[in-house]
Image 1 (cartoon, rainbow, N blue to C red):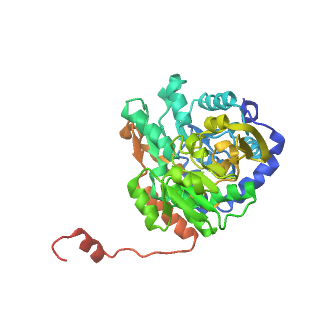
Image 2 (tube, rainbow, N blue to C red):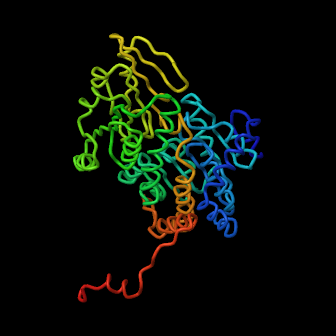
Image 3 (cartoon, rainbow, N blue to C red):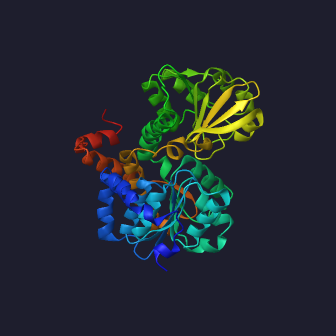
Amino acid sequence: MNTKERSIIRDLSLAPEGHLKIDWVNAHMPVLNRIRAQFEKEQPFKGLKVAISLHLEAKTAYLAKVVQAGGAEVAICGSNPLSTQDDVCAALVEDGITVFAKYNPDPQEYKDLLIKTLETEPDLIIDDGGDLVSALHSERKDLLQKVRGGAEETTTGILRLKAMEKDGSLQFPMVAVNDAFCKYLFDNRYGTGQSVWDGINRTTNLVVAGKTVVVVGYGWCGKGVAMRAKGLGANVVVTEVDAIKGVEAYMDGFAVMSMTEAAKVGDFFVTVTGNRDCIRGEHYEVMKDGAILSNAGHFDVEVNKPELEALSVSKRTVRRNIEEYQLKDGRKFYLIAEGRLVNLAAGDGHPAEIMDMTFALQAMSLKYVNDNYKQIGQKVVNVPYELDEQVARFKLASLGISIDALSEEQKAYLDSWTEH
């Protein structure tokens, strides 16, 4: 059975537009292009099957093609119902990749498509949020034996994997790509910072300058969202549960307060914590009329939707990707993209140049785990520093930038303790 016959997608006739999108990101991903050339020559995945679960848009599609160029038979599904782009799915099918994905499937269909991806019997996995690995360990344990290992994209996924490792459930090694320098310093901060506001701005068509933006969580993603909000002219408030991060946000020039206080003053709210119920009933009670709610964490649990609906007397779609909730007292709140990832569900995700580094790490980490899975064992490991640095060097080279190197004398000086 060929990929067209096996795949489950919305409409194959959408492929031409998908090819244009993939061609565009290809032209702006020089690091991944360099790795693709290496993979074509070395064929590190020859004879292997790779299953990928990521936000299925053009940049992800190009990563799948790079892995395919390394000799792999690739099957891919989406990692979020609202981030899948049907035209990109169609283009991948034409390029010989098996796709199980549609935009906005119902919850059961979304799960079924994920299981279909696992049923291709992969040797290696690339995951985003841990859904693929979790389903493999809970619902398709019969396929575990064949899997050599994989790589995880997100903070949320790594937390789930480490919980599995801690209780002895994890059955193969996973590389924590999110924890690499070239991931969180650039993807989480600059990528999330820009793409979140891309999604909010195109969806609402409202001015940010002069408004109060509440950023819930000041990890690397929160730092990026706050920085870009400040650049757009907003008054930025940060809420935190970590005292050290609270001090950091204060030192960065932002107001820091509890969510109960921030709820009273916010015009825009962006949650970026990876935890649930960050905005909930007690906060809705004190929010201003017209507050706009959005989430940039992996799952749609950070803005508590059931409690918002319970307080509302009506709900309607007022713009594409905006739902209006009217409360009994007449106040109206607006939720973007059902509380799912605003940058992908209501936008195109991170810029191509940012994902170039992240997906270069994914490709190299997949090769690393395939080469070393027997030695690594059943645990979560970091991306080796030399791979992280190599991605950075490839990036600098693509920009025409050169940096200095330590002399032998400088290396000796740094390694000594007697001659200072």
